[in-house]
Image (cartoon, rainbow, N blue to C red):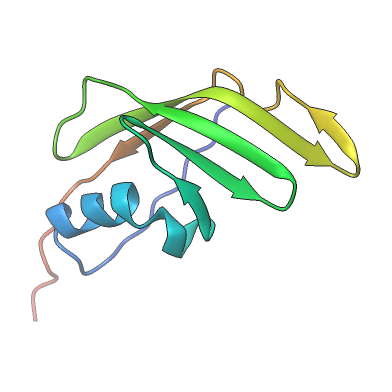
Length: 98
């Protein structure tokens, strides 16, 4: 099953990309570890680790889940996110005409 969402912001593309990659502690979880080319996000007793894919560009990049331990209703599931790919596409738009 695929999930897609579109978020519009007044920030420019570079600022948006930096926020997605470097400010996960603001928008996802306060508990983020970012060793070289990956990130582990922890929330409650669960965690998920994403490897940053090497084919990144300034406006398009992806992360692949390499490790997960999701605990939902006291049941651990190590496969819930495993292999999931998050694809980020940043498309600059022009401001609306006045």
